[in-house]
Length: 218
Image (cartoon, rainbow, N blue to C red; front, top):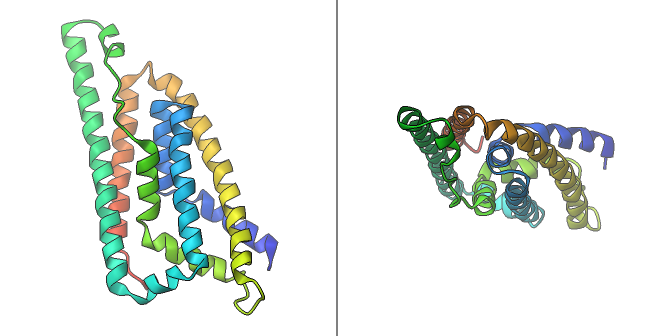
């Protein structure tokens, strides 16, 4: 196992922007640190499941079955699109509420607008993590380079590498959550900016959905 090369590759993979990290950042910016870590827990569990599936050989089945890959792919894309449209719709409602408050009362009325509490960040983050067939295949392609299939305990080697990846992921998500919470203090005073961020993240999710829907095994 070439640990330095693995660490470098793992860091670059973790830092790549994707729907998981973007969703955690969005939740932390809108809901605070506690909700941010709730979303991060969903990502962590989802990634752990994917790494386990990879170690047990399930990713190879997905790679050999285009039909199964397409099912997971389209379901995942549909869910990302659902989340994206939901965020955009929420942003539009917020902007309209702000405009109505300005026209009928004062800016204080905006602060009195009750926050939406129906969001379940853990469940949403978990589903986003699991419904990504490319992530499973990518885990297989990346981790397999550092595991000797003829070793005495290849599954244990997968587990060690998975723990390293997850540790890096927790550190990165924590940085996003703390940064998002810092932004949240400003967003509470600038609801228009918060709505714009939510709409922007929603648009990116639609882009992720399109990219996943057009992905292939090649």
